[in-house]
Length: 217
Image (cartoon, rainbow, N blue to C red; front, side):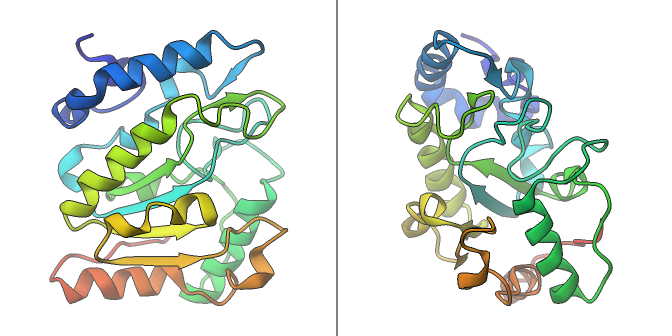
């Protein structure tokens, strides 16, 4: 199965990284594509979180599963294509905390590609779902893939930002991580607001002599 990760939207530099679990990726993909209903994101965007060169990877933000609304998910956790309006509520809450933490205005576009381009990997715990239904592809094999990513990037010293219980299942793989409740409207008031993930993340990077992320969108 050569270059299957490129077929799913990853940069070619990730091929060797994912090679040990290509069979697991193929098995998960086969399982979800055989399920009834439309899969989201589309096949060529499933690994878009890894579409920047691997050597840039400095931060891993872990979400839950993709937005189920058709046209919203494009392979990067919490991000939506530029023209999507109104923004999903979880993303609006992220931008509210972003504005407070960084003392800047909230962005108008929900496309988080500028973060990805700087080495922020926006990975959901579950890579796909069924359009119109959240959590449709839990326990279909994606958990093994996201666990592998966490193991490998944790060993490489990547800083993790873990929002919500599903993301925090992977906390043990990281020596440097930040955790808070998920930014969804159901939990954002329980500790996500005021958690300052952006400035705290940069402090962790600078403590190990790495360049901070320019979070401005």
